[in-house]
Image (tube, rainbow, N blue to C red; front, side, top):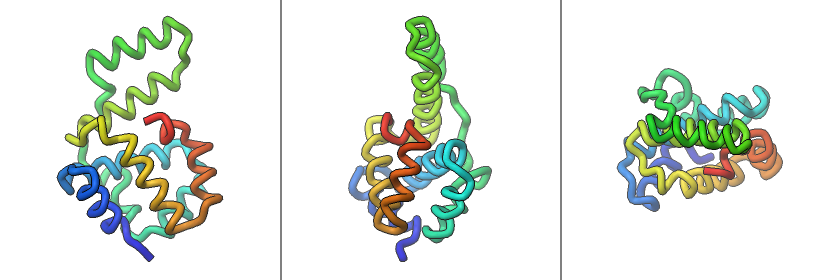
Length: 140
């Protein structure tokens, strides 16, 4: 059974990001999953991947940035053009990634790699439910 540190090391190497920022960004991914997925799916995920529970919540120190001034402008524009709150939420999530020092250009690849890791270490049904319940995973 692979541990979350295995994923972080691999993702850091493959994405060319420092390990400490990849660790923090993975914590953001887990936080987003915790906020949107069912509690039973979150528990299944955390039980299946040793060390994952230590990355989410207050253990990972980072700013809860909302995307700054540009993020506020983009959320306002999204609202004005009727694009809904999901755009604003995605901007909030990207702001959280940015606050870790992780390259926002690599976020989509990190999310994709993480979901592949979830599939390999749990099952495809869990991964599909997470993608359904946490739509921001596919839009990053």
